[in-house]
Length: 109
Image 1 (cartoon, rainbow, N blue to C red):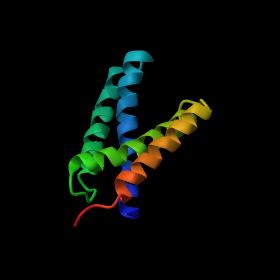
Image 2: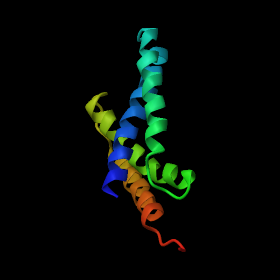
Image 3: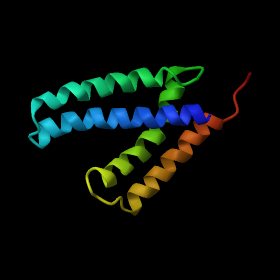
C-alpha cells in the first residue's frame, strides 16, 4: 500500500507539472519550449500508473483520482500561491474517502 501511495504521489506531481506547462504556454504566455518537459512529465505520469498493483486499470486510475485532487491543492498553494478554501478542502476529503473505499473495499477472491 505504501508503494502505491508513493507512486500515486509522484504520478500526481508529474501529471500536474505536465498539465501546468500547457496552461502556462496557453494562458500565461510562457515560451513554447515549456511544452517539451511538460509532455515528458505526462508520459512519466502514464508510465508510473502502470507500476501500481491493481487487478484492473480503471480501478487504479479511479483510486488515483483522490490523490490527484489532494496533490492539486498542494500545487495550488505551493506553486500558485493561492490558499485552498473550505470547499476545496471538503471536496478533497470526499474524494480521498472515495479513493479509500475503492482501494480498501472488500473484493471477491
